[in-house]
Length: 327
Ligand code: NAX
Image (tube, rainbow, N blue to C red; front, side, top):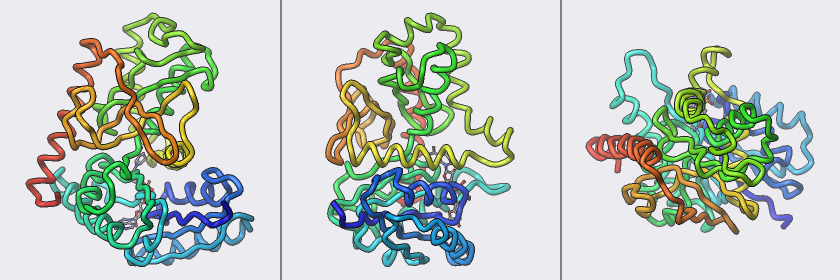
């Protein structure tokens, strides 16, 4: 189709935005199909955002059909087909968890309501801003007219990190690794699962054959990678988060390849004992803009305990935002 896809990005003047916008505009999401960018920021960041738009102009991207910026969600989200909610309030000094949840609650209730009012009928909404799963839950709950399966939170960065760690351990190419799964919350409790993954068609856990590495190196390395990046780089992951945001949106819109799946945090229907209504990461396949949770995987005691721990944390977050009146 040559009609531009209208894609909103929030927090567009931030670190992730600085990488994401150029990936979107250069065709990583849509190839040759034109894209129109709708960029939302808070008022004090609009000037910086104008500078980023100057740079977008200077790239002379052939398929960038237009860029609009602003601080009014209802204007920016008007008619959007895809909304990438990246902007969020980071934890400041002395901020308690409740403060963080209320600050983000204010953002995601307002954005959920605005999307509900003005987004296109076919809108898909991907949440990158943290706490991503619970922010997605807040937006979803505040957008009652948008089907719940149009919301997802980003665990694709964790998924990609897990593939990369497994490739490094085994000497396999990243393209040989299939069926990786991140379960649960995008947080340190997440569970990257090698037991259902495959390397060159063989079971990954059997290829690795090192339970100690899985438990004491692989899982913590993936789960704490964000902190390791901050430690090394002095700021949080940005280019990799942007790349994962593009990967997730592209696969959602265009489908997963035969014989593989991806990790997406989506609303639970109770599959695998994950409490209904939580936005939790699952193995999913996608087709024509819709996702389906992969069914029938056998979950052993080790995996069960890990999934339960992460979904218990999500249930706690849901309780906290319910008490704050955000959902
Ligand atoms: P930055 O602080 O660089 O940028 C965030 C931007 O959001 C700022 O420009 C800010 O003005 C804007 N913003 C704040 N409130 C807004 C609102 N109501 N409407 C529109 N814009 C608003 O953060 P950055 O490094 O870009 O990270 C963005 C978010 O992604 C953070 O919440 C971060 O924790 C989260 N991440 C999520 C990841 C994931 O895998 N799900 C990984 C990377 C990243 O940590």
